[in-house]
Length: 336
Picture: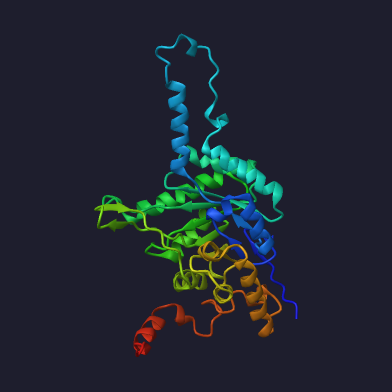
């Protein structure tokens, strides 16, 4: 039996729900082509960081200012506008243009930032470069004890509103799970202009080097065990918030993809699994997804989508406190 794997995300019709998310693999044309060949239905380019844009702008300003006070030749000399200067951010746009020219699947640009400002205009630049959609990757660490939760939530909403003002292409927002009322915040983000939510942004915590006595970065790739958090919230939000839902973090196998689709995900995004196993792993996941659905007489992804969400589940309490209590009561330690 042939299974229809098509799905819709951000208004884009995709061949299947497998989308490589932002990672080093999606930053090079050769690996983008390999991902498409393996079955990717769309790709998210690596994030262009707010700090990178600011650094580029300051670097150009430094060049423009250097010698201005003492070089007679400086006056009257043509100085390139920042927007026209060949900075790192312009290189990102070049990659986006090339990806659009060489791939036959949707290409989604990505911006990572924390504050509304001039960098938001780069969403418009990505749109002009041909991006089919934009993912706004908001990475805010609420470390200021003087700012309350409402202030942090306002920052998120302002960023989305500003970006929505800049672009007309579909806008997805990749968010943190650390809100007091995730369901309410999801609805407010949609009201602010988000066409889709990517659940969730995976925060990277620093570590301490005991030999050097330094605090430094610590990157650990995800595992399938981390699937539970996006699974929970996609299951809760499906059918309650009118927006596209993408699951990311912990998506490694066909079984992971199936679980998320049953919970209500429109697409599932992979990064760590592809970094570990390479682009060809995507073909194995796609085949496994198709086989699982066919063996259980599903004719399409659309038929399976959301069938075990909280709204559709015969036991809606499984997503909330009743399941918490049941888990604690029924847990038995493994015996060696």
